[in-house]
Length: 433
Image 1 (cartoon, one colour):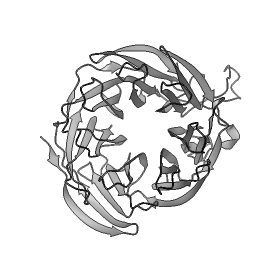
Image 2 (cartoon, one colour):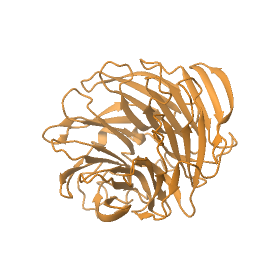
Image 3 (cartoon, helix red, strand yellow):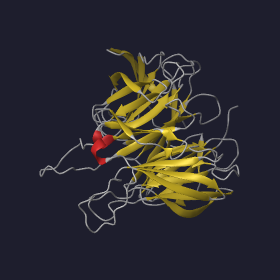
Image 4 (cartoon, one colour):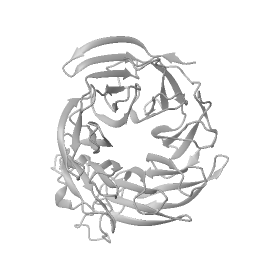
């Protein structure tokens, strides 16, 4: 049974019109069935992608397995591998030799980074920096960013990139002895696009620990060139690229975790970025960001989820030219002042084939995936959503991706699970086209 989001009320705020919807939770749903078999991966998978890497029409699964993050001065302070599952058909997968990245791989993107046809993988790590004062460690250049070039026939070339230590000052919490509580580079997300006018794809990543964005320009010779940093005070946590002012150049949208803001940078098409505006995300500790046309009016919108203090997803509806005058808050919890959901990931996709943008959230606290199916009849605001809940036992949903895992034409969800160190598949039941 599904429950329609209810309890709508409109209030005014400095940024424009703000709308609030409280979601009515309903166990189960009509959109997905849980596949009974879980797929084992490495420890604490923090990100998941599904893409056809061998041109057989079926998506492979790759998870960034962060593991437990410990003292960065240890020989191995966290896991440094990504699980690689090759699709065999009929929802069967073979676990291959893992990819080796930096310590605590945190995010992974799929893009064609070279002249070959097959898609490649780009990974950023949270604890990639080398510590030169640890004499027992056989130090190699820190693997802040890893590129796995898909050479075909199941072969990948590993290439690593380092952001100079002096470019990333530590700006987060320190303990009583003035030692960092966290570590550098603190890379938490990345986006790939043609940002500087040449034909190579560039990478931009969020350096949360250093209040910076890291820009790595594409290179025909080395695939990624020398990194440079862009100041982004406020704890940048997630980044997306899109053309927000329709000038033909990709811009940046970034959620700023520590300052509870969303920041926008205008791209000049030559690798330069100018800050345009910042505004409050209507919640505390925003952690995930998606860009999509949510209400189908032809303009790009933003979806932001909050973690640890708020159980809210906020939709910012675009007017064009970096303006978002109307926002809609969706409360997943029943009580605003109690943390009930702990949203760890958010995706936006058409999940049932009706050409509408739906949302799915990985809710770590109650071990649920919560799906918001867009039930709106037009682009009018507020948008209406039907709320479905998929409950897990002995596992915690941490990350999500959308793909057609069984080649039946319906969109499925891949769910990376902590505690079980596994991937669960939620299989789409139908399409509405």
